[in-house]
Amino acid sequence: RERREDIATLARFFVERFCRELKKKTLPLSPAVLDALQSYAWPGNVRELQNCIERAVILADEDALHPRHLNLTFRRNPPDQPPDDDPWARIDLAGSLADVTRRAVAAIEARKLREALREAGGDRERASELLAISYKALLGKMKEHGM
Image 1 (cartoon, rainbow, N blue to C red):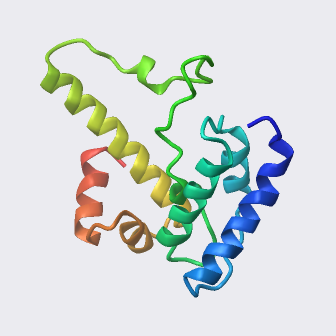
Image 2 (image 1 turned 90 degrees about the vertical axis):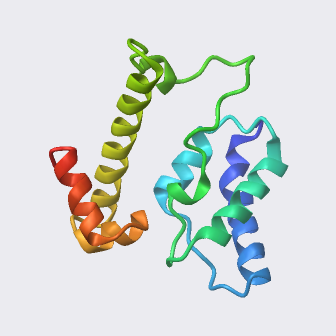
Image 3 (image 1 turned 60 degrees about the vertical axis):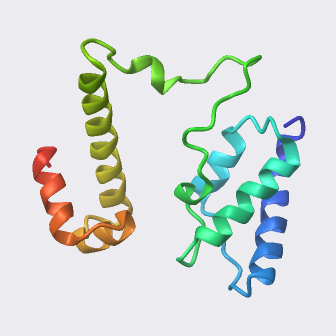
């Protein structure tokens, strides 16, 4: 966390190591992955980076690592650092627990659908594969969210 300039080098080293151990073709790091790695606080330091990359290599079923493989989305900055942009602070907590849950799930679903469609270049069939849902379920969710 104190030597941010080393993050990309370490990440590439870990990717090569884990790809070799798992007998996978070496996966390149997309620019979005490098941005995500650089912007994360890394409270666990190098060991946390190593574990993050190992998990990403295991999960990657494509020919490159993408931010969704890193699972940094819901990790928080350490308590002694203010959050960059706390998504939880924007959630409307009005109403019952069921109301709040319904709104939060709907917002997350819509965002995830948009992200998958963007990553798939608008190809709905590919987006359904990325989301691990059927094509029919994707169409239903898109309709539900007015897409």
